[in-house]
Length: 295
Image (cartoon, rainbow, N blue to C red; front, side):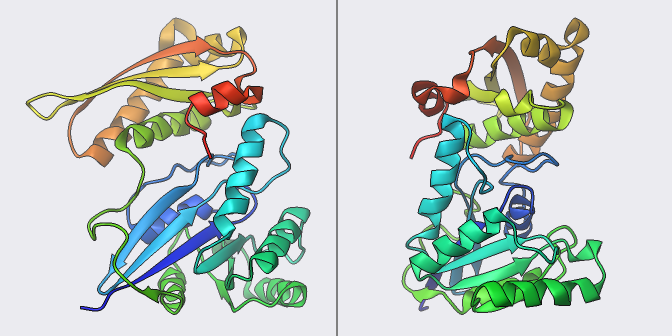
């Protein structure tokens, strides 16, 4: 059988639904989602294999104005991910105005000379007349190879998007085994699941100042997996909030995370969590790299 592969970058401003789209395409949760911006920090590959074609979707951090070393890393990840791929998907919300983040991404796509498809997400939240205005606005701003309205939440239009992506696949061997869904190591997936629960359970800036390190990941003969995780935050006051009164908040975060870890691993998981303070780690090149955010 002659096989084909397509490397496809998914980019856009924070909170437009890139990770939700990646998870829907793959058919399982491989990248975390929350209602807070800048949830995704790393470049994450979601792998979809259909018959003779393998699609490798590269979910990227939201493109934003950086204010920290961590932010610099995230923005650079987006820039690098647009280069040397078969197709770029620019995901936008159904709003008939183009913001500076979209303008910046359109400029980078244009400079890369890469085919690009505009994906208008969240169509389940607006009337159809609004979509016509959005399509007209973006058509004037750039020459997209295709424009597709979808809802990553309901799946409306996603199958058509996959069909369009198939037009850009190149002949060649699969890059990953056909039963693989992500290139992330299991330790990294577990760390990201814990960080997702921090984003869901905590308010304001606290979760953005957290990082998670998996210090132990071992499997018993019975198949049970033991995980030790350290949650780092930037202030002693934040540590108290994460732990909560009599440890209630940390227990809630850990319980939610353990359930998702078990779902991903397909086996029972024992999760132990600690909280430590690393002041201003987001502005430390050493600590940003130490927590796994490397080029």
